[in-house]
Length: 346
Image (cartoon, rainbow, N blue to C red; front, side):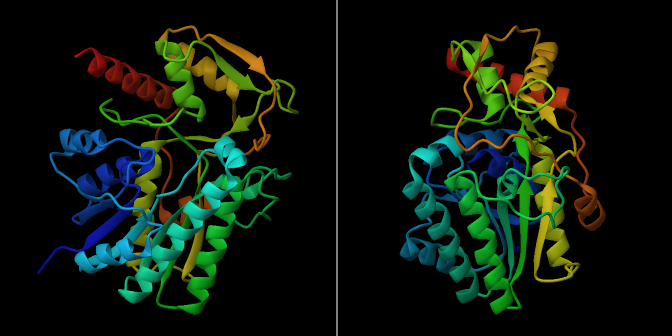
């Protein structure tokens, strides 16, 4: 009898690759990836193999192409669950190119959900985002907090994605679904052999910090210095990428073991602590010993002022809690940046 397969879309991406590593090391599933490398590297699977000793099968297809999706699901007969990461995720790019985000993030989701129905796959985990909350007034954010206006097309695609999944769950009671609302995943695998490695210009704070420290970015800009926060910069809830990866395994167990109260569940994935941009920079400087070259600039369209999570529900229901500190997040991110520099020299 064949082993059951977990399909990971966006498997060469930042969170997808770390989740594949945790799935290999902590479960007995066969893992198959889908990634067309639009913002990721072919090297990712070499890195996964170096860490785990296993080569991952990847389908380099565009999930917006329904015929290609159908071929994939016809080829892979033993899929028992899907973890859907594949999406464009830059807030600033989504503001500049809304069509790209609406088309890619929504069409790919619909194609995957239709394939689930056609091929009787009943377990689906969706990579959502804390951006669905918008500029929320009451903090920390709970899963039942009222969603604010989406501050960017990217955030809107996550709000819309959740609504689409909720509609599917209502219409098809055998479809078990979970939406995981990530706060701000950062850091790298403790080996230093894999981490955040966008092909396009990095927009997330920590890779910008590490690439500035290594000299790839001459000077970084802190976007906004007069927000109504303790030091004038945005506040976020940072969470180590491996903690996020482990949460996906917990969510998978949650639905496969029939623990869901309904067939559509939402969980926040965060540390529960708010950290400002300047505090994150200070933490990096402390653990790395590097002084960052940065300037305070204007606010960036689409950015939320302050957001951090209430983690009590995910702790209670999933039995999941973060393990990595802010210093460890920065330490592993820097280790990964140094590893890339070493690779470039060799």
